Image (cartoon, rainbow over the protein chains, first blue to last red):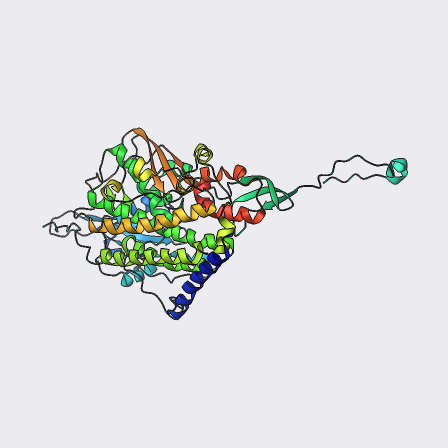
Length: 164
Length: 387
């Protein structure tokens, strides 16, 4: 046990800290009424831009939890020019992300070669039943509106020149 | 216990004879069960008590086993980086670093200098965030509620910084083989400097609030002393060993993974080896990490964030063991690769597993409230023990 004098000094220093903190404004954010600003990079929800998707299945294959369900079929489109060959195009039938399984790792967004998946910082989409956490194509398309613009990088970062 | 059902009609002469049964009335077996607020997760401690003194203690682990090493057999390297974040979930960035370092060594790829510096900054930030939680919750385990609030409040600043760079507060998933996923956002370095100054102030607050408190000192001084040789032979590592006087820090003494030799820093040791020493060492290390980050920010080199790596990453055949100084202690990954996109076998050596193995020896002869103090001061995370 420390001596009496040291005890008094120790306790009064501690009480001084709490007194100072009491006189400062509280840092609590009263959540449902006030919301904090989320950084644009925050991994909230994944949005799908359907016109870019070519059903290459890279995202579904690289998901560690296998939470992306994709179905598509091939269709024939008329030739673009006269005398040309008919084109085959993959059409997306079903693109579901099961947010009950999703780990929010971002590998699907990173791996997509056609820039069809984007991160959005929206986080308020909790449901009362687990089945409604399976977001289908339309819902994922709605999240596209919340995707923020690409922000500038820090000083010293390499600036990639666009390929001509 | 079994009950002897004696039929009085058959055995009436025996009914009033004295049965010579040895009744174990002295000791009580207390199950500090897997669900307990003081055991940091699902650790079960079966202690045999004589009154309030512990005679024998057995930790039972495995309640949080998630099968990491089996999971890694069927996943590729970026997927495993995601999973590995969750082993020690409080300092999740620090778990990715030795794994990626091992894969890079097998591939003979060096991450770019900028990526190495940012990796070091984020590892030290992970160290600060987990130690701030420790400083708060050790006060909580000893009986004071205020430090817990201070710890969580100060931690938020660091977590917000990590989120603005990586996208995730707790699970950054930011390391890639060859560097990092993307570069820092605009204004991060200035924000980081302000936050580190706030961290230094909060360490001073903890010193006044908790360490100088005579009640805290009475509860922690002399409790749970780990002798240096015994600790080293059990495999205790990290701040626990440094609090017993052994000056061993893998950031300086181990294989060079990150550029720690380019900045000035020092390790802290304490001679006592008790719970107070472990608290003291971690507080000083938090301060030192904040100072290290300020130095690293000054020297941050410019350049690309990712080295040239092939599009589909196949790690060549070989095996390697890489260990690093996780905030909890020494963490190592032993990777056996057979040339595929994922490893053949990964063995994870975690710090908390060895730190907890000393508990049967350490808990002998101390009182039950001191058991809680010792558990808090050893600072293990169940995800780290069980994987």
